[in-house]
Amino acid sequence: MTYEAIALLMFASMMVMLMTGQRVFAAIGFVAVISALLMWGDGGAEMAFNSSMKLMKWYPLLTLPLFVYMGYMLSESGIAEDLYKMFHVWMGPLNGGLAIGTIGLMVIVSAMNGLSVAGMAIGASIALPELLRRGYDKIMVTGVIQAGSSLGILVPPSVVMVLYSMIARQPVSKLWMAGIIPGLIMATLFVIYIVIRCKLQPSMGPALPEEERRVPLTEKLKLLSAGILPLVIFFSMTGVFLMGIASLVESAAYGAAAATLAALFKGRMTRKVMDETLKKTLVISCMFMWIILAALCFGAVFDGLGAVRAIEALFVDRLGLSPWQILIMMQFSYIIMGMFLDDTAMLVIVAPLFVPLVGALGFDLVWYGILYTITCQIAYMTPPFGYNLFLMRAMAPPEISLGDIYRSIIPFVMIMTLALAIVTAFPQTALWLPELYYGK
Image (cartoon, rainbow, N blue to C red; front, side, top):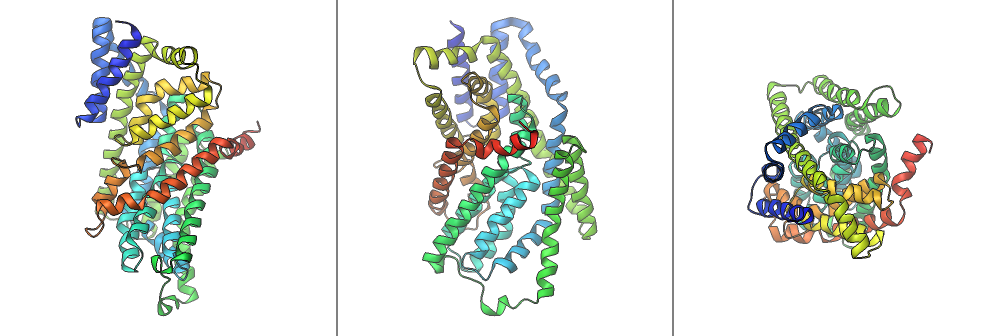
């Protein structure tokens, strides 16, 4: 059997195991270890051990639990809820204002946490009940929360980009900066859609009643100050990193400490808050660590087989595809896999294949990281098995059916596709800011 056939068999075996409902890290790691043992004997067993050592020595991975802790601390202590109250008061008088405020909430939550799951949990528990109570169209607001939560993997500090930087060997700071403008473009397109939709159909997003608009200016300013606190934490954390005052890990520790002090300052640091924060942080961090460990082992076996060079020869030499055609095929494959897997699993499964190929084709790996991230956002919301669809179903109230959730994402998937086309056609939307900062 040729090495190309072995690589194809490994990939197919892994996909079959995933479809049977096996845990992602178990499917990836099992196929990798068994393949290594069958091909190289007892020496192949060292691949898993070497991968674990590589993971433990990768210092920037310490940012993962710190960012997750920061996001959950702000959520569990109610500081994120203060942020939504601010948007509620200031944006409520507009048609669709609360939906626009929800997008703003999601952007800031994304900037605090870096995970789409956290944004979904906050939006579904805080914003969704309030929007439904105010008479907002349930299909529109369900789509708003799903689309807004997807910004968590694009707006810095994105945890997924930290993992991509390890695989692609690109600076995390460049990837974070590259995600800022595309993330703001996408959020702005969401807001424009909500404004136009509620302008044409005011009943879909009614403004607050007149009596509820009469909030004293002092109360508005008090809410504004409460909402600014998470922004202060985020900008101070990223500021010390981008200015070179602190390293990536040190800035993440600064953000985690600032979130804890903010909860203490607000008088909301209870034993329950700390227990929930630590428990959720441990669960998410361990999940990521196991997946990365399995993926490193899988990638080492693939690299040993020369599968990357074989795939490059297949696409370029035998099929005669152009670099852009190959890139588009890659993006379609992400969308298909996104129906079954989360963003981290997709990244660690195919990145060892795709990232070297992208570099060999002459594309910028920082720019491709943003394309990958946006494509993952689209895949997350693509029926029938998009990851966000089932998260939303688990968190939504009974009156929102799965059919409602499927219908809700149609306009937002179209908007994300438009944003992907913009970044693809104009790479400088992603590259301008990091090139400006690093003086390229």
